[in-house]
Length: 93
Image 1 (cartoon, rainbow, N blue to C red):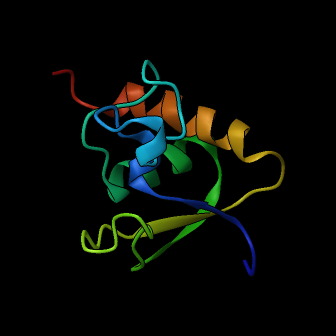
Image 2: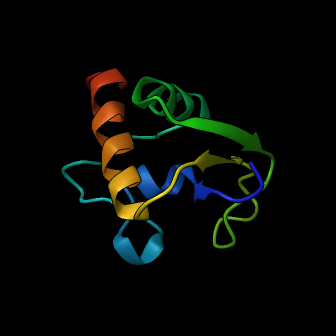
Image 3: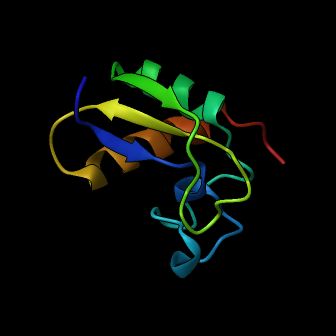
C-alpha cells in the first residue's frame, strides 16, 4: 500500500463546519469520530487500511492520527461509504 486515500476524523465530525475540515454532509456526520471507529467502518466496507500517527494540518495540536485507505476511485465515494458505516456503529446521543 504505497498510495491511498487519507482520512482524518475531522472529515466526519458533525460539530465542525465545512471550512473547518468536515468533508461529508452534516446529516451524514457523527459526533466525535475517532480513528478506531473509522477503522471499523473501513473494515465493514471491506477496504484495507493502515493507521498513521500524523495530524491534520489545521488541527496539528490534536494528534488524533489518520487512516490511509487502500482504495481506488473517487474519494467522495469512500467518504460517503465510511460515513454511512459510522452512522451505523456510532452510539446514539
